[in-house]
Length: 65
Image 1 (tube, rainbow, N blue to C red):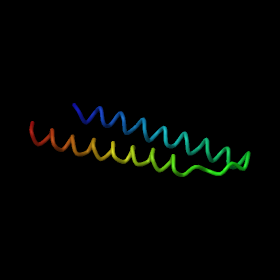
Image 2 (image 1 turned 120 degrees about the horizontal axis):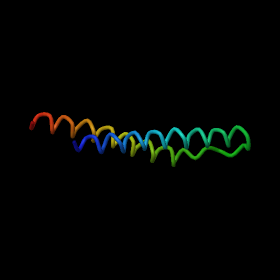
Image 3 (image 1 turned 90 degrees about the horizontal axis):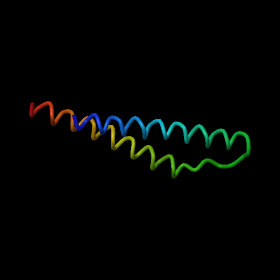
Image 4 (image 1 turned 180 degrees about the horizontal axis):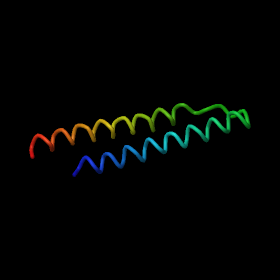
């Protein structure tokens, strides 16, 4: 059950990262504004952490049940 929470957070962080990357790319292409890779690194790190946490908790709870 707890892994579902992490899975939801991971999906939201991944979608947010894709949306922000697309917005930054669009601005770079149209306005010449450089992309801010620091923001993308943070969001990617959060998403990767949440995907790992979902996997670990699902394994932990499956072995207990």
